[in-house]
Length: 155
Image (cartoon, rainbow, N blue to C red):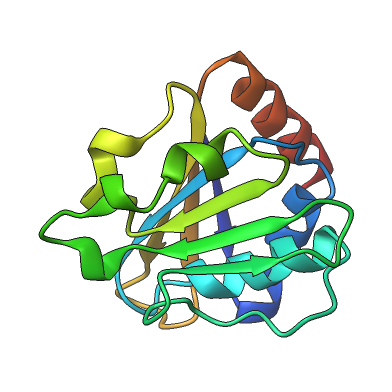
């Protein structure tokens, strides 16, 4: 586990960008955190690290947005609306095992669909400073332990 504090949206994007430069096909990143904690902001940075020039926005109402203009496709998912189930109908395993990187916001609503290995990042807002966030990187599997170790060295 690795914890890292950011004090701005730009810093959150920069961490995402660093990670985006290191991800590989079939990587799965699960983003946990309250509304407004920085999940989509982080994903914008990750997209930038992949070389994606398109504007990245939350896929809340579409569930999945695909961006294919970077070095790897990015599958950005917001499954908040699946709070009462239904994730098994999305074909998530095809995304998770595909040629791109899958980023899932609100993954607790599809926990039965999670792959065996993944990187979980939790975003915690500070009660004292509205800009301050703590990002907690929890790797699940050897690939993600290596990824977090590489990221920690870059930050």
